[in-house]
Image (tube, rainbow, N blue to C red; front, side, top):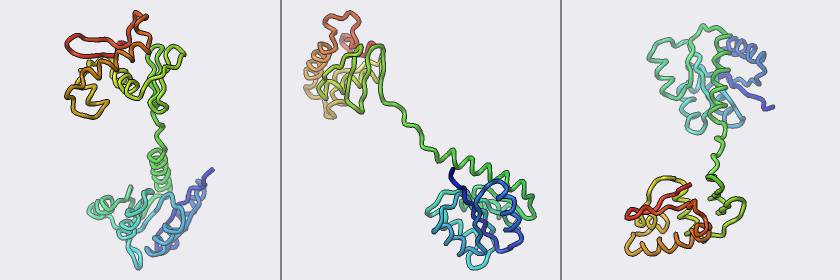
Amino acid sequence: MKHITILIADDEPEIADLIALHLHKEGYHIMKAKDGKEAVLAIQTHTIDLVILDIMMPYMDGYEVTRQIRGKYSMPIIFLSAKTSDFDKITGLVMGADDYMTKPFNPMELVARVNAQLRRSTQLNQPVAAKSSVLEIGGLVIDPDQHTVILYGESIDLTPKEFDILHLLAKYPKKIFSADNIFKQVWGEAYYEGGNTVMVHIRTLRKKLGEDVNRNKLIKTVWGVGYTFNG
């Protein structure tokens, strides 16, 4: 299980120790920095999952630390400061902090906010499961990544353009595509005299799909308009 490391940057040792005590009970690994420069160095040299940051610190204040963090890192930042005005809170949040608590503070509330920010950060940074690009319609399976077509368990050998036409039509079932539109999307060129080209490809595509002997035609001609997928 990954250790979660929290950096406490505060020039008051008593406050840093109190926070560390409560966060240790939650199972977190704690690092401390007594000024802004130490905080930035810790972030540059260690994997930090969350920062609890005072504003008024020697050498570099919390605002500047936040500015440097946000130039490269996205971990949650919670300001914990004696500055209590709305202006200070807004400034901290605008600079890139995720939360703002004022001193004196309830340690248990701080722990709850830390937990909430870490949950949110974990959810946001989870890789999004890639949606399958495979199309399955009836007995037809089209895999654009593998460039394969299977019809009722049998592999169908298509040319690249035949595949692209079938995939285009199947991706938008019931939508009618003119020969002009198919040519532009599959060939990526202006139409000109492409109508016959599209017609020939669809004819051979239908033959490979067995539509000459199959009453349930997958590619339907809409006379005077174009073609549509009839899956």
